[in-house]
Each structure stands twice: as C-alpha cells, then as structure tokens.
Amino acid sequence: MPTKKTVKKAASQKIAITPRKTKRTVINTELAPKAIGPYSQAIRVNGFIFCAGQTPIDPAVMEIGKVQFMICQACHGPEGKGIQGLAPPLAGSNWVMGPVENLIRIQLRGLQGPITVSGTEYTFPAPMTPQFFQTDEQIAAVLTYVRNSWGNKASPVTPEQVKVFRGEVGLPALTVADLKPPGEKPVAPEKPAAPEEPAAPENPAAGEAAVPPAAEAAETPAK
Image 1 (tube, rainbow, N blue to C red):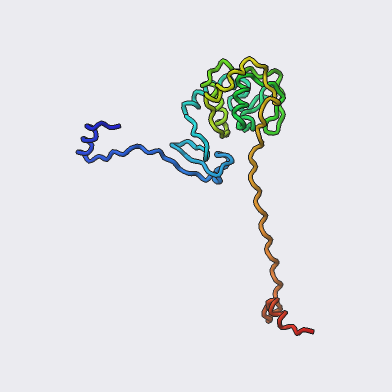
Image 2 (tube, rainbow, N blue to C red):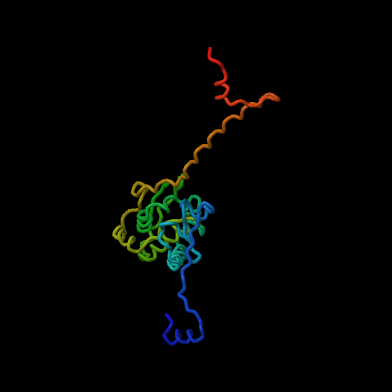
C-alpha cells in the first residue's frame, strides 16, 4: 500500500495510482483439449491455466514437489513415464488422477503389484518403498506436483489430507485390492449422426415443368 506522502506526491504530479489486477481469461478448451484436458472451460490466471472448478495450484508448492520428486524419479523416470520392469508410469495414469486417498496411502505404506495403469498391467519385482519419512507438507507437495505435471490435471493435495492417514505408517504394503477404484478416463460424448439428405428429384424431361407430387395427385382424376 502506498503511504499518504506517496499518494500526495503522486497527486501533485498527476500520476494515477491503480491497484494491480489479476488477469483472468476464460478459455474455450475445445480449441486446445490436449493442453487442458476433458473440461468444458478453463481459466488463465497470470499465465497459469486452471480447469473450471479446480483449485489453483500454488507455484511454491509445485517447486517443493519437484524437489521431492527427485527421489521418485529413480524408478518412475524424470518425465513420469515409468521404467519397464521396475515402476509404472505416472504421466497419464488413471490412478494418479483418481482418488487422492490412494496416493497418500501408497506414499505412506508402499505398493505391491501387479497393477493395471490406464489399461496396461505392470508387475514390479519388489514393493514400492514407502516414503513415510517425508513430512505431511512434502508428501502433499510431491503428490500435487505429480497430479499436475506431464499433462496431468487434477486437484492439489493438502497436508491436512495426508495427516488423516499418517496412522497407517508401519502397516504392510498395499495391493490394488486395498485401494479405491480409480475410475475410467473421461470419454468424449459421441456426436449424433448427421441426418440423411433427401434424394434429389429426377430431372424433368426437356421442355416440361416439374410438377410437385401433391399437385400431380390433385390433377389425376379418381377412377
């Protein structure tokens, strides 16, 4: 906030002081569905794109998550594509963009395969090592980062959500049977078939005018 002295000085010099406004632009996602995801609208806030109804992601949280992901990328790869025979992909994963509860519990307890990710089954030689040594804030940040990187778009994870499951630390590694179903990927609605156009009438003989069927029937005498 400018001081009274600053405002007075600005007024004497006829300098207009206006508060900084956040630039918000509504985007039609039909123009860029791959970048936005399966949403009808999105909002651009100061350069960041958020889906309609999605909580804006704090850039500072994403930075913390990126640092914490350095541990995860040893198995999942720096771009979240996974490593064959070691760990499934995170990019485009229906599990990653599914219930937050699954990711938090996996982070705290680890996971034993097999698991089917977006239609492909993955079996890894050993259970995923739990990352319970991370704080609630760090787990929330890395999961938020994973859910909003490499084309993924999902709600952020909060430390409060992580805290709810902190008591599961020390329990055996989870299996798919212990998790909530991730749900299927959104399917675009099918477009209705275009109505068939009526067949074009045959060309009348040269020199004859075309007679509408109704008129022709009226001219035909009843037998």
